[in-house]
Length: 257
Ligand code: NDP
Ligand code: 8X3
Image (cartoon, rainbow, N blue to C red; front, side, top):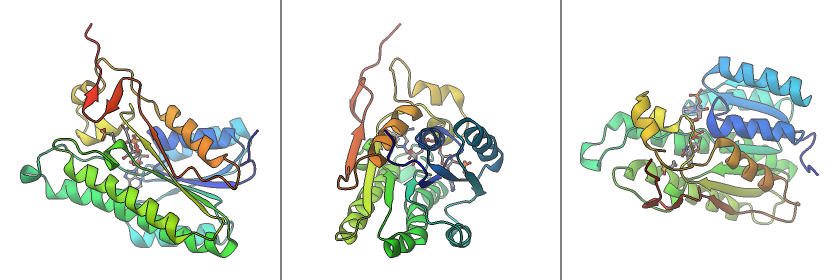
């Protein structure tokens, strides 16, 4: 049974990977969708398919979550119609993998501006309307990298530690309201994440998942579906999801063929 049929869900970073899979499963659960990412062509193709397949309403918008003005003006346009019941803050990326003393400053900007400030902008743009209605559910996509640090990943991990702190802080600030705040924190998932991190180097990206059976975007979307379908008195505050072949950022089982 779906508890979100007819509700409105906004998913950021819906053009690929985990966000696209969340869009699909939320539509399967009967939610109308708002899909944000920068690549509008991909959003349009996905949105058209989901609207047809699941008979839901879909609105798409090309929004760079780092662009504060774009976030607030698109949010205002959305809120003039309906207030989202569910916000999945998923847009994010790893940029490069380098020790701190060799890190590219532009990579640091991209990660912090997207994963931390972008998530904050989107939350700040929509949350007041949720508070006014005393209804809503925010799901932040964190990471195992939000609780464990691995070599050369310090800045990405810092951005995901920040997501964990922001999730907890938002949740505490909303005590006494009906608004739920959750994080879903995956480990290794095969999406375009590594391709983006290594700037299109396919061999390097594939090597990340060599010999193991990683999570898929759909696995994580099933977890998000579970979280948003929980009864109103239940808040799944944090859900960590790892491949069976992964037990920590340092413990990954790879089969050799
Ligand atoms: P993908 O690269 O497949 O998807 C990332 C999505 O984020 C894309 O839709 C991309 O869209 C969007 N995005 C990136 N930058 C921006 C921006 N500035 N503005 C708007 N949208 C943006 O990777 P994943 O699906 O794996 O990543 C999704 C989330 O999951 C990220 O937050 C990531 O940190 C997290 N995560 C990933 C894990 C993994 O192993 N894959 C594990 C744990 C967490 P577009 O380029 O069109 O803008
Ligand atoms: C992405 C997963 O382990 O590469 O958050 O950081 S990991």
